[in-house]
Structure formats: structure tokens, C-alpha cells
Image 1 (spheres, rainbow, N blue to C red):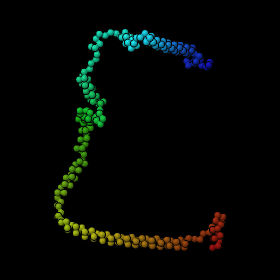
Image 2: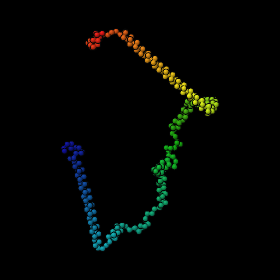
Image 3: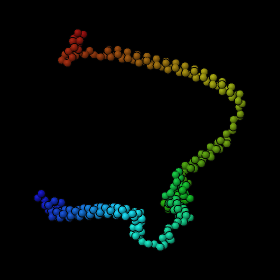
Length: 254
């Protein structure tokens, strides 16, 4: 315990010893005061029980004695009825309505299923577009309008739109065709188109098949010629017996 005696947290320090003594003395006094109150309460309860027993033996009513003791402790008030508090129902209703109106205005009081916009008489500030704009917003809006006016794409679109409307007006309308003629011509055209498509498909398949055969013939003929040429031009090679003895034996046999 003699390690670092100069530290403030050392248990053998004089200040710490004095602090412990003070705390112990304070705890002892609090315990004594608590015990004294308990004993006093017990004495009063025992005394009250003895008084009740004595009144019962003497024939005095306990309730009368209690009311008498309470009236003795209470001060006499001659204007007790005048001091009785009376409430005005109309004033209370007006006060409650004023409080509800204030809470609705602040957005505190909202009923179930009611939005914040419905609770106010008008739109809230974040839904109002007519509020005063800042100079930066005004300048940005002016700049945007100026760019739209000076944009050449707007002029081109206007020109193309006018040209398109002019061409639509200049083109004459085709003569009307009866329903029977249109149906018959459509049927003939559809039938003829199917026949033509079938013939074109057959012709196309035949041409593809012929091209495939020609290509295969060229490939096979080229491979045969190249193999014969390689066998004719390639010299006979011998293998060294050091690395490939089996090939060397084949070479000697040939």
C-alpha cells in the first residue's frame, strides 16, 4: 500500500481518509434520523390505538371524536360558501374553441384522415407559387427565356412544321373506292403475293443449295491437289536414332 503515496486516489491518503470518515458519519446520522422517525410513528400509532380503546370503554363515538379533532385542526371560515369556485360553461366553451383554433393554425391539431392542407384555410407556404422570388431566380428565368428565343432549333422546327402543313394541303385526296372493289382487289393481291413468295422461296433455296455444292467441290478439290503436291515436293527425311529410335527404324526399313 506504500506504492505511489502522492497520488490523489491512494487509499491511505489523508484527504481520502478524512473523506471516508465524513461519509461514514453522515450515513450514521441519516440512519439514526430514519430510526427516530420510525419509532415516533410507532409511538403515535400505539397512542392512537389506546385513545380509541379508552373512548370505546367510556361510551364516546369514535366518528364524533374524529370530526371534532379535525374541526379543531381546521381554521374557522365564515365565508366558506362564497368562496366556492363556480365555472361558466360558455366561457369554458369559448376558451376551448380558441385553443383549438390556435392549434389548427399552428398545425398541431389535425384529425384522423385530415391532411395539413385541409386543416388550414388556405394553401401552406410550400404550395404557394406566387411567393416573391429572389433576384437570382428572376435572372435565371430571364436567361432561360432569352435562350429559348435565340435557339435556332425553334426556327427550324417552325419552318419544318409549316412546310409539312403546306405539303399536306397540296396533296390531292385519292378517289373513294367502293367496299366490294377493295375487298376483291385485296383478295387477288393477297393470293398472287402468296404464290410469288412461294416461288421466290423455292428459287432461293435452290440457289443456296447449288452454291453450297460448288463451294464443297472447290474445297475438296483444293485439298486433294495440295496433298498430292506436298507428297511430291516434300523430300524424304530421316530421323535421328538418339531421340526417336522407332522413327529411325521405320526410315531404315523404307
